[in-house]
Image 1 (cartoon, one colour):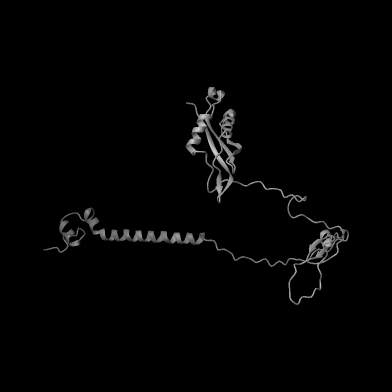
Image 2 (image 1 turned 60 degrees about the horizontal axis):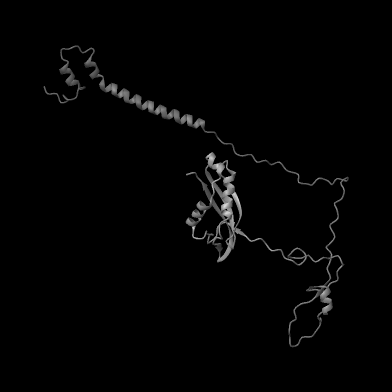
Length: 268
């Protein structure tokens, strides 16, 4: 007898031949006989577990969502009626009087016309010398004062201080360039004896102004050498002793410019 499904280990025909005359109540025969049913039960259980997990997750997510209540409009009416005036409160002060009127004489540029008729002759020179010129003629009350538009009231206009720039088109430069400036500083700086004995080193950062003539002024210490005030004073002395610089220029004009410079104090 030929078995069609001999390669299938769970085939009933094959198992009948293999276990013919053997104990078929337990052991491998029972396992093979129940194999298909067992696999079906396992797959069904896995599918049921997945479906249960998805369902529980969906229920929990729906319960976690909070339903936002619609906003409630406040329909309370507000009384905008001003409160009654307090009878004990003093009345407001009267408005200030109008400013005094200055006496002026009408004087406008003449217009030349062929058929002109002189209806408003120009005022005499004596009247113009003692009265302010305007486009109308009016009498003053004697209290008006002419307010100067420029100057300090005595006809002298104060000269404004020149503007000091931070960055310009052409920055100021030491004669010969940066390398010459460093050589000048190294040659002229005198290391303070106290700082040399104490082993103090560091950089002194200076800020100064190079004016339109190339002169140095307003030398300030931005950050000094820690614990060495003499080093800072020596750096200021050397910078002030520098020759005139090439001034900075803005729009082709020499201007005053701020300049920052570090002076290094280092023991060899």
